[in-house]
Image (tube, rainbow, N blue to C red; front, side, top):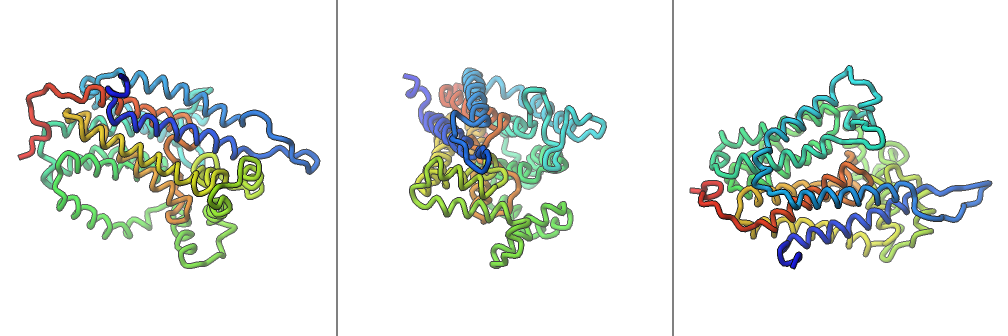
Length: 389
């Protein structure tokens, strides 16, 4: 009965659960070994980070259940207060007089609020606020079918993007653009207008290079060196990328198993192997088959969300599902590209798989909202959505 009411959203729910469990296994494998007098101690029990991620999963499932119970049509009316509250939190992170005990820079970025036992990343919650604000704004309008109307949506996306870039967190800021395009296409924006926007962005993108921070430029230059076959930076800026590719290759088809993979990862010392580079940990342990399973579950997550949007008769629910799919798809593709050495490493996690409480809870919130949309997919409104003429 529950599966019937969820419709295609059950695909997203099951894919999310599978990805989270794979992530916990990978995080456990990525735990450094304990070595005493040159002897590797036997591994017993779960690694602390894996146990913590399990606790985050329980919290995330509870939050997702609450989100499923919420009527998306009613919470849509709160979209703008929620959106501005998230902008307020992003501004709070940038205030110079906030003590480091509350906002402690990590990797040079002011992206986290220290809540004692938990750390909260406002940019993750802003993803939901942005999707809700866009869905509420575009539910009954055709303004976005003109260039002038597109400017309004650009402002809605531009404010959080600018604040997140100031942290600086270029990777997370970039994810808002694909989600915006997903929503605009679903809402009937003219493809020729969007194509012109993309072409103009590509033309002016090189002009933004001088504005990048030194470490961001170094990442781009390092990628270009890899493409050219230059190995001079393999122990410098390209070390993380090269090590990830080495671990992926070592996994071969069926993987090395838990102990061999754990040992290999320890002595190769891949930074962020429980986080940004978790895919390398997965393929090292489970091989190409494990990697394909992980990517396949990610695509199933997106398929379930888009399918739910397709059968939903309500404009807010439809755009909510599409916007969530946009974020998830873009984040997945960028993370895979980082691990394979196809894109510069810009600090993007693999959704539902990488370690982190804020990102895991927010992704499960999206799952809960999609499930709620599926349950209430029938529309009783007389007004035509998006006012397509």
